Image (cartoon, rainbow, N blue to C red):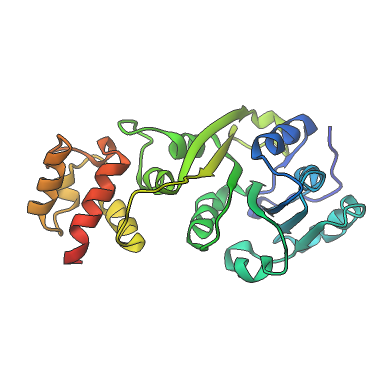
Amino acid sequence: MEKYDVKFKKKFGQNFLRDPNIVKKIVRISDVDENSLVVEVGPGGAILTKELATKAKNVLAYEIDRDLENELAIKLSSYSNVEVLFRDFLTADLKEDIAKYQCDKLFFVSNVPYYITTPILMKLLKSGLHFNKIVMMVQKEVGDRFSTKPGSKEYGSITVLLNYFYDVKKEFFVSKKEFIPMPKVDSVVVSFTEKKERLYLKDFDFFEKVLRDSFQYKRKNIKNNLKRYDLVKVEEVLQKHNLDLTSRAETFDLEVFVDLVNTLYEES
């Protein structure tokens, strides 16, 4: 089991993995190879970083906690293909940071700080970069939300958004006992594989807005949630998919939302 000589900081969501076998499994399912650049957020004690470095051409890690600088320098001293940037990933210019690397493939593999899981994913989505695969350790209930299907109570706007870009798969469960310090929740590893073909979408920002509005009040039907839109057009789209204005957004699959957005975009 991995040991760490650090002071853990709750404000940064620091819970470090102990078991190297879990780390090996994460890297194995990521499909990282010797032609890859891997981006990692929150390397912490570097247990995952080191394993990635044995498989990838380069690893670029972002760490917000400068107090970990000495620990990471020691742990990564024998890995010349790893660079750690001590900055906030959410405000970093990712395109600029990776521009100097010459790699055929781009991956994101990370045990992310759970309090910024969704902001990290949204940054990746909007970066304009093409990730061959994203593999993240996330809080179990968040992983359920990302990978669930229409009709589930966990199904929401983020589910639809992610499924537009990626094939989302819940890979395996990780007990909270596998972390130091032990968090209050269990975790899952989730993979996001870029779709080779996507449905035609007129405007991504409008897509995001319609999704947020559709799920604004989960207990209300689509007529109430989209009452500021042209409900005649909304109803026409829904009827094509054997739905109506009394239906709830949680029952709509990706194709329904894309159809709605493309139909309503002209009025926006």
